[in-house]
Image 1 (cartoon, rainbow, N blue to C red):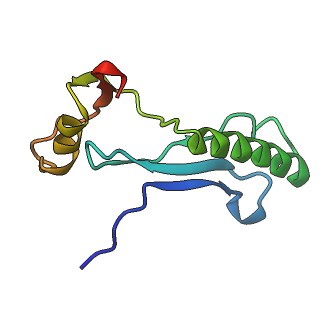
Image 2 (image 1 turned 30 degrees about the horizontal axis):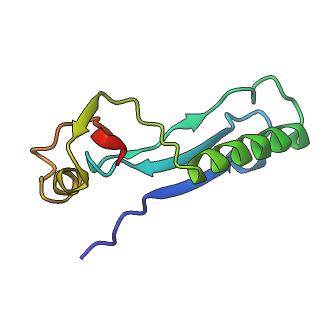
Length: 115
């Protein structure tokens, strides 16, 4: 029996084992509860312009802090079409009782009535 997938794996640095010339990036992953897929974006921006280990590490710390705050505030990196649900029960049924094969991929939840 497998382990339950974590909803969020917070941002962390891949520093190519300390190699300054390597392709550095910050990676995190988020589980899309509707589709059951894990989205794992990698952020490469700005690392190529920096030359020293300390500069790259400081840049990575800045990115990690920014994305950690975004994820903690409820932001998710899904770019999905919107589907409206009548109430919280309809939303719960959509995420609980539909199998992976019958779910539409890439859905964004929008509740009517502000629920």
